Length: 275
Image (cartoon, rainbow, N blue to C red):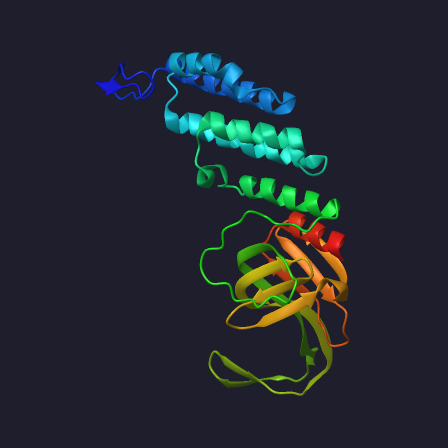
């Protein structure tokens, strides 16, 4: 006899759930999501909904894992919504702090999709926009392979970033001329000349994986394969993509580069506002 994974009662042979229990479970999750989302939107105190949420959890057979997942999902959506109209303001920051207190979820869990990082990054951008020197409360684990200049301030450190640089490739294209001569059964040897011309194409070549450091003056990259320093004042153009940023430095021999894996929204705004 199988047990229902929701209520724990007998579910019948070859069954692991009651349809009614599953329906209650899904409806309960949807209700909690709506309640918490509304609190984020209206900046309401989550503790005012504590009893209502607990009643739904109990009646819908919602376990801690499912509750945690729905909390994290709502949190990710709320942070993105807060950022849609700019940086996170004071009241929104207070709502985020209250949510963290209410749920008691570890920072590592809430930051699974970098949403908590976005909150801190938003505060950094707010400082920059107000003309203040950013002083983010971040902890650097592991090595720090950068030597900053005097009076230079660390803003952010990204790990496991892939550097690509533009490279020109040359190949010859054309067509082959000649006749086919049979040398043995099933085998042919083609003779003739090759005439063509060189064609140059540009590709983004993977250089290496390393760390990117953003300061109030420069962007640094360090990896076993290559290290570089890009002053913000030397950046001619910057393009933001979903998976990184493209940079063009001011210099006759400087080729376009692409940094893959960092937060393009944050990096673009830091450079654009400090440049």
